[in-house]
Image (cartoon, rainbow, N blue to C red):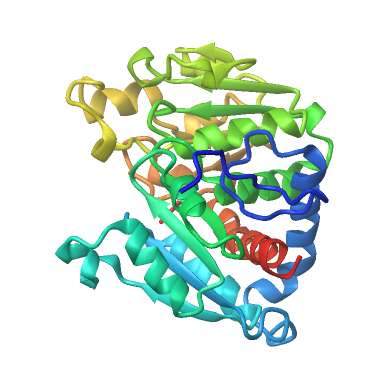
Length: 319
Ligand code: CP
């Protein structure tokens, strides 16, 4: 296996794999968002594009649970006419000790062209890509706390639809468990590259990363103050499965300090939108009345996920 980092772009600048948004040029992000926008009419049904990836095979290889990402990749591949292998890791020979790379090489030998991989460990998708055949494509569906690039793209598409294409006018607030969040990292990468006017980050000190993740962000622990003048509030899931004990005093206290309530939404701009990547902990980071309320665009994010994943599959497979 090569120990060189896997290049995401071909020498001509087109997308080979999608492993992270970090370092991708603004033109690449904008092109994927434009393509996703154009694909939206076909994203939720229809047969017009069923020839686009006919004869190509996409495998979803998820070593962690998922509702939105896996389902929307499978629907995106179906709407582009690809064959889909929804590989069930839990019922596979991985449970008999077969390594992840052997699992991948065996599926590759069956004709898989593109793997969509989710894994609990940072960097595993890039490691698998480095061990695969040069013609095989990889899309990171979330690795550890490192990156969730298609979530970052669908969040940018949702922002662009609601707030326009000029990100320099935008104040975006990201709230909660940033430390464990691959979504926050991909959103910050994309917001920086697209030139967001201001990225604010708010959460308890115990849930904010100490590395350079928050470079260039305005960081505060006071949620009420952080809301002033923001165009978009991106709430994050409290990732209890990745958390050591004691990082939050109690769920009730967390909701009091960092839960998004209707009263707090009223502190943002009058037309501010509320986002959440899902799955939501209702009553922990977000009140149900906000999740289902007029400012919420959470289900638009989910719909945009299908269009974005169609655009990414097309870029890596048909490009
Ligand atoms: N947003 C997200 O990644 O959701 P799933 O874990 O359900 O895929």
